[in-house]
Amino acid sequence: MVTVADLGHGQKGIIKEFSENVLPIKLLELGCLPGNTIELVQIAPLKDPIYVNVNGSHIAIRRSLAKQIEIDIQEDPKAI
Image: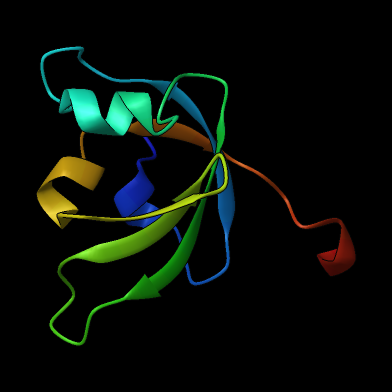
């Protein structure tokens, strides 16, 4: 299972699924929903929290929460 916590800097993924009782309502309202793209923007110096871009919203989330959000990693077409 690949999660948001597994993303590298600048890497993107498509949110697959998560347990509905795990995410706070605020994240759902900001677009953290299955099918949306999520991109890792920055990691804090002590590795927690992580800063992501979801649906145009920049959000800081704890690594423990990021480990609960399953994703499919998007391949970078420039890397091929």
